[in-house]
Amino acid sequence: MSDHSISIVPRQSVYPDKEIKAKEILDWLVSLDIVKPTTSDCILSSTDGYPISEGARTVSSDPDLLPFGLWTSGLEIITERQVFHTGQNGMEGLICPNCKQDIANEDWDFLSEWGDNKSNHLTCPLCNVATDIHQFKFTPEWGFSDLGFTFWNWSSLTDSFISDFKQKLGCDINLVYTWI
Ligand SMILES: [Zn+2]
Image 1 (cartoon, rainbow, N blue to C red):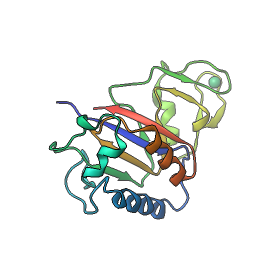
Image 2 (cartoon, rainbow, N blue to C red):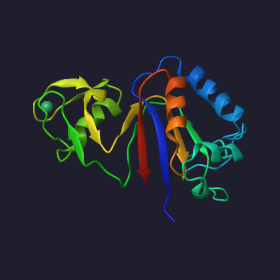
Image 3 (tube, rainbow, N blue to C red):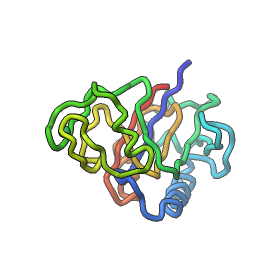
């Protein structure tokens, strides 16, 4: 079976006091018994994640499809700059805010400007204008931040949970659906 994930990513390349916020969000999720407080090998990463717990049923719109019993089923908290891409879901469209052209079919090398931490901007390969990466329109959504929360193999999250999450982060977010 292939794995998938849902990532909640602030629409900020550099999130202020990200470690403090990561801990605050973790404490909130643990207080609702959505994840367990101690880490284990439950995510597709070299680091450990926080295992799924019973309260997850209250924040999923398809609780029967939650990955209870699966190995890869935890929450990964990322506090390093990362491109949250969609994996096999790919990129159908990427619209430059300046020239409005779709650059999804151009060479994706221009993404390394952000990925290599040279800039929080992307330079459009067609018009050569650099704009903040979050002004570009990615379809489906991608995420670009040094903070992110990835739920491995979880079924859809409820709108109210996503809205609470947004409120905790204090900024707009990208929801990134990834298939490995
Ligand atoms: Zn352009």
